[in-house]
Image (tube, rainbow, N blue to C red; front, side, top):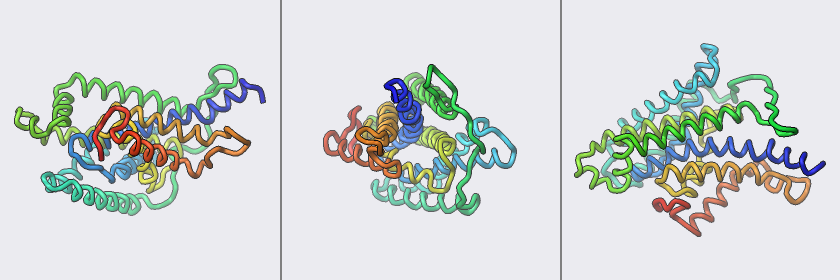
Length: 302
């Protein structure tokens, strides 16, 4: 195999898929970082909110024949509203309680959501689409799968919209103020409960989008969000917990690292077997916690 062919294989089969997976991690990790920044607890049910959004999209695809991309906005809205409802019913009564109580409550929410998903949609592995789509040729031997193009482009658009919201809108500025000092924000006249609602809307919507993209990228099953929870937290910690922009960088870094680690760098065998890709995320997370607990962007410490 020539050098150009080897490079094309690396880019087509490892690097670009890693970017797509990194975009999925980035969307999910941003929600984790926002929730931690505003509410000061690690939301372990976040992965199952992703799964819920993915199955909401599947319902529209299976029952109405919609394209999964057309169903994506509905799934995002469903995930956002479900997150607000969960906060109102479960987390709001513990708003002034120690963080560990809310974390334990999030484990309960996680189990309830997964059980409801299994009850309504079953436990079988599902697909949004059947058949195989040919990759789109770029230059020479370089190819790019259509699903990866859409995941990357839509994720970039969502990241741009989030940047505008956090930096330019009044609510975005209020969220940043509450992230810095919740008590000072409250004294300054900021409606903190409204900020919390917006945090759940954004976090839940991004989680649902990440769940749909995860289903597009592979397959859909009730544990898809749970399986991604470790890489999501690794991405949030790598970028700096509580830092949305750091979560985007961390998500891309973890996604690319996981896929590139399966490349046969030394011999004809993968450096890391594909079944153990999550170990790369765990390794990066542990190293970051030891070397720099605040992450790349100097976020909060868990």
